[in-house]
Length: 153
Image (cartoon, rainbow, N blue to C red; front, side):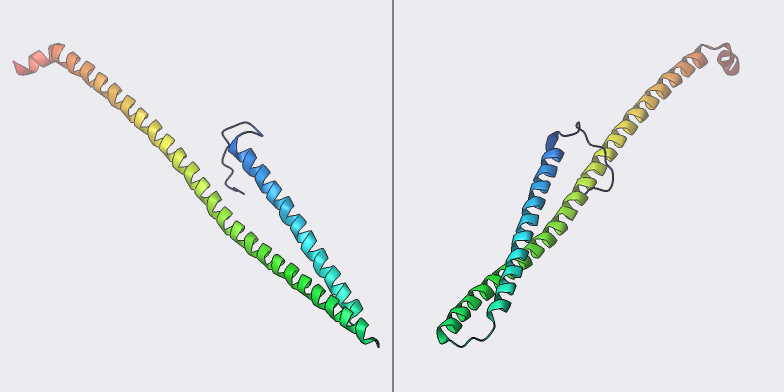
């Protein structure tokens, strides 16, 4: 979910990025399966509740249907609660994975800036050495030149 487009260090299909992608895909499949199960439970329970909610004459049948309605209503509530928990998990995952990708992006930027600073330090060191060498050459030419001797006399 990193939209910055930072280059990856390893080849395709290797390293922690591939294992994280596989784990995310597995989690997504598990969540989708859980979602399907909960929704089918809600639909089944609701359809059974509607079908048994008619009023019948025999009192025994009414008590059996009332018990069945209680069971199905309980199952419907459990499935709805499971869906609410899943929504909460997804929100938390979105929040924390957003922070994780943000932290990952910051770490990549820090590494890039550290490399740039190192490169700049080496360049400045090389320029300083070249300037010192050039200054020594100029000093030696100046002190050995004939023009210096004429100025002091």
